[in-house]
Amino acid sequence: MKKKIITLDELKKEVQKAKRQGQRVVSTSGCFDILHAGHVMYLAEAKARGDILVVLLNSDSSVRALKGHLRPIVPEQERATVIAGLESVDYVCIFSDRTPCSIIEKIQPDIVVKGGDYAGVHIPEMDSTAIYGGRVIYVSMIDGCSTTNIVEKIKKTMEESS
Image (cartoon, rainbow, N blue to C red; front, side):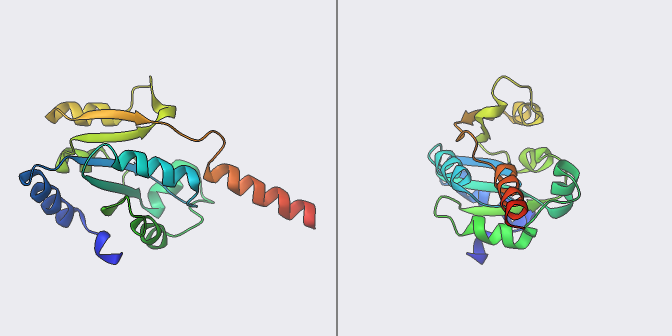
């Protein structure tokens, strides 16, 4: 599992090697704070689009910038370990920017996968993939299945039990 969690320099080498071998590289990104069924199905669907799945994982500081000071709930190294433990995931690389665009431009995956909730919306990844001829595709999401919903349910349960 730990061998799947790699630095950007290591990731660049692995992606280049995969491409030389004719493999299709797929990347996706996210916070993956509290792993749930929606995440697992999303990542399996992303992996089905190619041979190698790279997960670009938001660092703790990046998650705070996106989600607020109370997040993430699970620290980045633990989130990386859980994601790396999934069969569908080949590599995990933690990044600190608000978007994964600089990494996408450096590793140039064939496909960048985003959740269907982004379909029809201009996202920065579109510009990054256009630079080298990659493409963005969208995969389905499970309605109501999110870390935010899990956190709210926990809060409600705790309030009701006190």
